Image (cartoon, rainbow, N blue to C red):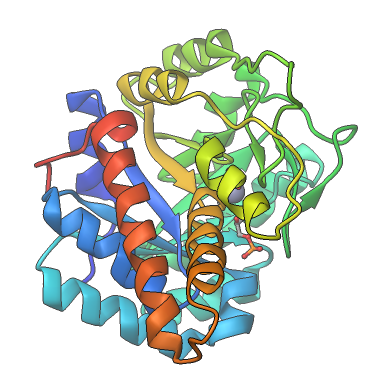
Amino acid sequence: MPLVTTTEMFKKAYAGGYAVGAFNVNNMEIIQGITRAAKKHNAPVILQVSAGARKYASHGYLVAMVKAAAEETGLPIALHLDHGPDFETCKACIDGGFTSVMIDGSHLPYEENVALTKQVVEYAHPRGVVVEGELGQLAGIEDDVNVSEDDAHFTDPDQVFDFVTRTGVDSLAIAIGTSHGAYKFKPGQKPQLRFDILEEVAEKLPGFPIVLHGASSVNQDDVKTINQYGGQMPDAIGIPEEMLRKASSMAVCKINVDSDIRIAMTAAVRKHFAENPTHFDPRQYLTPARDAIERVVSHKIETVLGCEDKA
Ligand code: G3H
Ligand code: 13P
Ligand code: ZN
């Protein structure tokens, strides 16, 4: 099956009260782990590529591998640019086989965010590509996404109608208390999401698909495994699964997960080397890593997203 946009996926997800998982991909094993889980559960899936992933694996390899996964599984798969930093990167992805792009103007003053997002939409739509915009800013640090807690702020529901109508975006990422990376809440801190903001946004934009970034749950067993086998991850808490399930049943149609995949992969590789110190064939340690990704994504589909059998 050729790659698809997210339009049909989101229409069905909104109506059905579930969300589609958007997982970050950086190499073949990650793509295979995710799409094997999606196939097992007959679930639609979004594979997303950050600017850092394009730098690491290169555009051409990622597009070719994602197309191969769509052909092999026969599933509806969208290829999405995650946190597009500028017009040029979005253009390169629109011209280069992606079916969806995010332009992340969330750090810009409002009018500049509107202007940049509109520019991307005007280039994307005539070429059959959909666009995700963002209002409000999540905290968190990853390779190319770095926002301090002081700079983070919630989405203002009074801006969303104006932003969506003036830009023409197809989906909107909002900030309601999630954050990027593996360290979202300190131990002892009570995770909270602003469902009141999500509700208000949904009232202002009836039927419009909302996106939740920074939605990893940070599996404590995987963190323990990493630390048991020589890692040094500080204790941290992610987004509770029941909160994500609740968001999926509301206007949230796309849930972004990257850190949980990284953590599961690292735990599997560290454990493998501890138990098999003589191994040096990458296939030996990347097989359990790929299996761990498949388990994580299966679990998300079953317990958080609710998109089983929705392909
Ligand atoms: O939200 C950002 C994604 O997790 C991508 O992270 O820039 O380190 O590839 P990255
Ligand atoms: P996590 O760091 O919570 O996995 O979020 C990933 C994300 O939002 C990618 O855009
Ligand atoms: Zn993100």
